Length: 336
Ligand SMILES: [Zn+2]
Image 1 (cartoon, protein in one colour):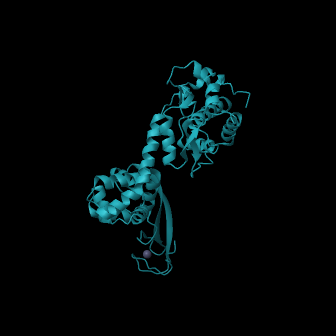
Image 2 (cartoon, rainbow, N blue to C red):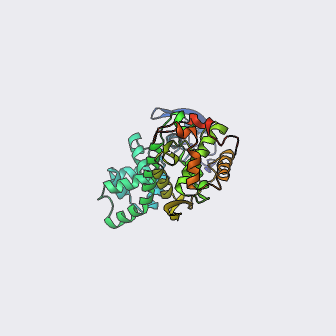
Image 3 (cartoon, rainbow, N blue to C red):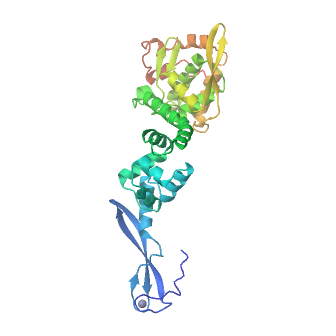
């Protein structure tokens, strides 16, 4: 604080140079949430008066800031910065939210939004939320600008959509099917990227995923990704693997290249630009690399034959999920 009160005079007795700051910690409530703030007052040594001055530390703002931090409510500066990033006027944002125009201005100046409006704000400030708002409130923004914005936001919306889809596929909390780890998108993306560096056909790729996750269950006590696997004709595969890989394509983790292997057209899983490196622990990465090494000389057909010997495949019905309880039966244990 750079306020010089040595020259200020007391509003009570008029004496100059005898004022000093006193700070008192106090607990105040913001919407039922208790916050400790520093209440700064000026004390006059001459007459003993205590008073607040609006130029001093603003404890109401301090309380609001603490509340914002606790509940993830955007600050006025954040709202303005976001609005300017998309070149939106206050009127346009108000129209997108269905609010009065003064409301957004007040929030940018530091007023605290109600809980309901804070939720609306957070939503519209996300890329997906802004896209949805532009879609629904078609008249809020002029057509040319609206089109440009929606075009720019679309990839994020598709990404979010796919991510949600995949999250829904692997949402089980049943340890038998997630291997003791609730599905983690970043882990799946990291493992898929790592395996894609070896440019294998999808059929083989599916098996590498399966073995890495099942071996991890045994060695680390949990799967790497939390992905569920099921029995397919050519061996174990991640459940709905097409959607999983499409999602990773949209997120620029992998790409699929068309190839002909022997006489069969096939898709090769190739790395793209986003590696998610760092999301795997050293042990997890090590397991994946050992699986890759073990199957180095196998092709789609021989690895399928190999996997057909697993109890995890033999004892499960076609298209049925493969429980991780089979992890301790897989043939790789002690061999990789
Ligand atoms: Zn005084």
